[in-house]
Length: 132
Image 1 (cartoon, rainbow, N blue to C red):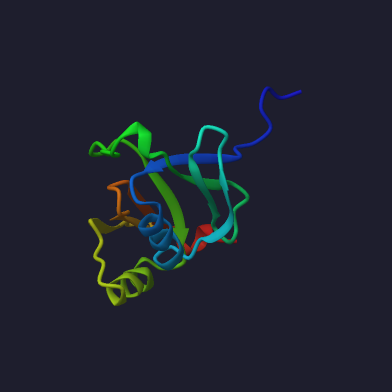
Image 2: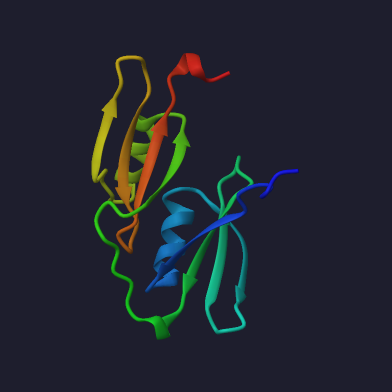
């Protein structure tokens, strides 16, 4: 028997839920799974990537104050088919990579883009031979 079974979700608290959810949907292509209000009054939006089971919970809880994300505190990492194509996609939305892309000699690479609240999003292109 395992102690835990699987990762269910990760929560990020934000100051502007609408702008953040729009970013995750339009820039990353995540699907909104559900919205709810917690017993203590938090507004919650659950999102997921097309090929993942794990959810991202976006939380708006104004009574806890404005969210201030420290540099290099945390990030979410998503696989992409092509960093070049993702770069073209975000450029069309008026967004630039905040770091990278950095390509590896063995193939693939990574880059970062900042979400509206300052949370980093890492985009990972796996080497073509590693994709089966």
